Length: 591
Image (cartoon, rainbow, N blue to C red; front, side, top):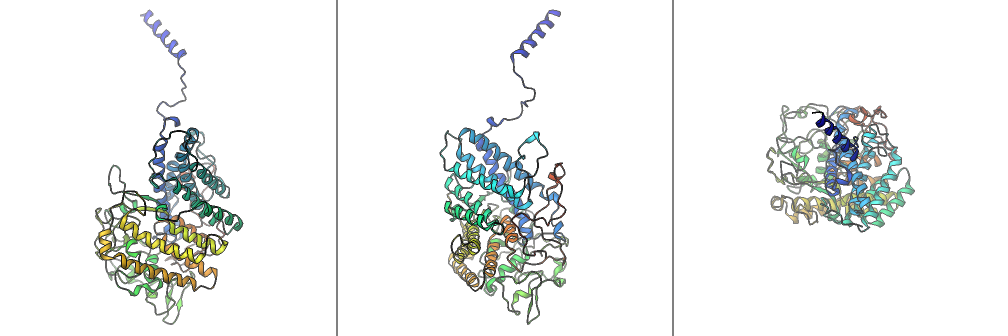
């Protein structure tokens, strides 16, 4: 027995002296050089779409594209509501991108590096535009630093632009090694389109700077345009969803939230009011009634307005006294000002629809920052249509949406950056900086691009790419709203919009119409609507909150609870008045 023990101990000594064992290494942890950068890139692409979807919700809620609750701006969303967006940005996009970049740079995988840098830059730019100072320089330290400091927002902007410049260099450089194959969910492997995206992101960031550094904005936009930006349907930066409903569920999140047990979101009444009455298009008959995009954006579950206060209590209420109204001989606009595109005739039907039901034909939404409880109207309120959520086109069927087999069955898309957005940005740049082309031409191109892309997506499901088409509403749309009829309506709408723009006598008036059309085109993209509204204070005339004293409009958002409670270097903001460095707060939005 003693001999056996001696041999056993001797064996242990040999093993111990012949192996190099680092007890600090986790044998279960995957090391960077053991990961497939293409698989990580897949996660980043998917994570970016989820991040954008959540970020867009907050942006749409404060800019009257989607309803928000609460009674004052400070509590339209609590700090905890931002936890998911924050985690998606850092864990799913930024950290994974840094890992891909490190491995790709070492291995010469230039396309991997370029794509990762662009997606990291996009996520970081949104964090800065939403929250201000955020962690970056110490954000990827892992267990080494659980309390990363925040970096100043005005310092981060140049770093983000540098990331984009490096990405452009990467994508223009042949790989120095055989790289793993990439599944490109956005551009199908077309690196030229990724370069155009990078330049477009630079365009939008430099445009944000125009009020604080016009010279830098002008030079930056000029260079971005020279490098090539998004101009065609195939270059739209969109993420496409499918129809599979389990393991995994790949449908558009807004479809899932509105077509299973009934509508879960409220569309903003103000948006539907603007689209129905804009340029006096309400006088037509279906389908040529209102903005041609309405039946693609919204699906009505009811064809007529309810008169039952048990269904919708506002029918028994009067409009808040601070809402705009007509006296019969004059329009009292109040604090928000005059809404562009709406008739200034006191006899216009629009002025009898500024509260409760925004139209006479069943469009059912909710007022801006409405504190009232939610009634059981899931099968009555209007909801997301075919564009962009992959829902149902409104062909006057007006049935409930508690059926996941309706419409495009969830095969929608995220409109992260569309060519129409670029046209409107260029129009603004041309108006105030003298770069980007002729402002009126870019305005007209933006209106027409939005009108075309909305129908194109709903009918074809591709937007000019070779990607597999989504299940479409083509048969329903082509029967109810034939291409020739839509083309006529779209041309008439664009002509009326351009005439209204050209009738303005100063740049402020022209900007108001650029902002109106850009804002409408941004349905589904709250990131840019939030930037637009703070940067320009336009469009004017936005619906006020139900509460006549809502407090300060959020110039930035709360830090997420998960961040500020766990990071010893961070304190929660005192309020939401702290503006992003490019927001000069020259326009009062506190209504």
